[in-house]
Length: 245
Image (cartoon, rainbow, N blue to C red; front, side, top):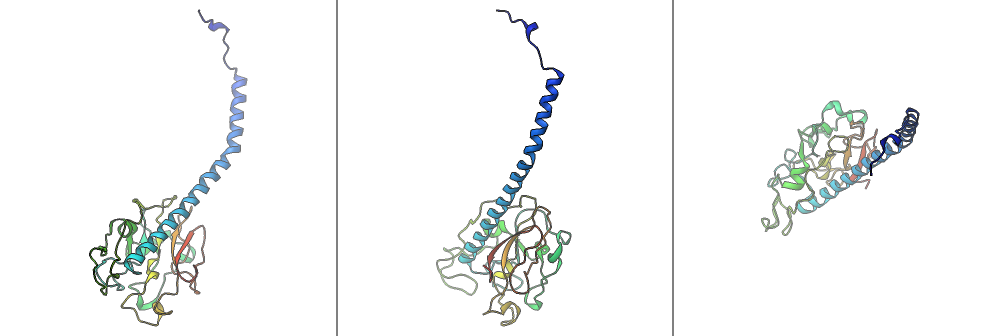
């Protein structure tokens, strides 16, 4: 059977115009909802990522001791302690700081230098090295048969990997950071002062931070004067350990 194309009619200009107007109206109505959905999904991911990082810190310190080190075989001195943990992502600079985060944390002679988030490449170590590859070369349960001054008790040791690689960056492209200095007092710190105010331990929180959508770190590295944390700007904060848990 031969189809008669002459009887078929295409869309008129008016019909096409009406269809386009309807599509534009639908797009205008749905676009904010889609944007909100995407934005909410990013915040959910940040929360899940920081919770996973916090759990990894807890498991790692349970296995190797409270101090994260650059060299797992050496003591937890000010020079050997990891003061900042960082995920994948661009290096954090002073230009990325804003608000309360512009103030350096100063604990006098009990840390190797004044600290802030942008010290990630100076006093920091990659989460990948600590959680995935055992880059610091912590002892493993098989290699730690006796208690030593630099290792955990018998039966403990690095049992990773604690997270799957890669780790980070956050949904807006910035590094996740952890002020890991507050996990442990250095062995060469002065007992009873600053680092050792409360029974030989810090009186400050260790937490995971995301800089949020504006990619600016605005929460103070050392928290507030009371040992807690005042979240600033659009940062996301997840408390890992400390007095305000």
